Image 1 (tube, rainbow, N blue to C red):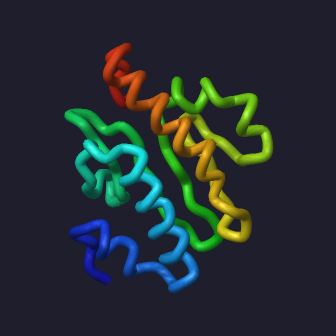
Image 2 (cartoon, rainbow, N blue to C red; image 1 turned 30 degrees about the vertical axis):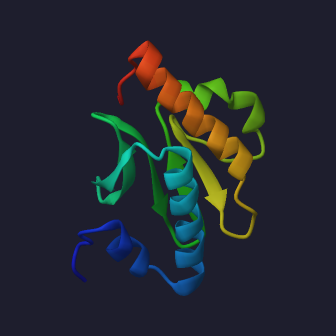
Length: 121
């Protein structure tokens, strides 16, 4: 299978139910960070403004939304129902997208980058 060249290619490579979830995450990302450039980084959809702000990735049973560790840590109390990693939040496909929480995390990450100059690490 060819490596995806665009976000559309990336999404199209998944089964239909996963595509639906990824389209939802893409729409939320674009609406929440309208000035960010969309592209593929590390083979996954990512949004950047000179540096990567956040990314998401699809898997068979879940999607990951990935921020800086500092952004993820700022929402620790609200993420107790989710499996998390250093900077990631795992979103099971069978659960609704926590859109409000993700919007607030994206806003935090953008503010963190613009005002605190915290780069992706």
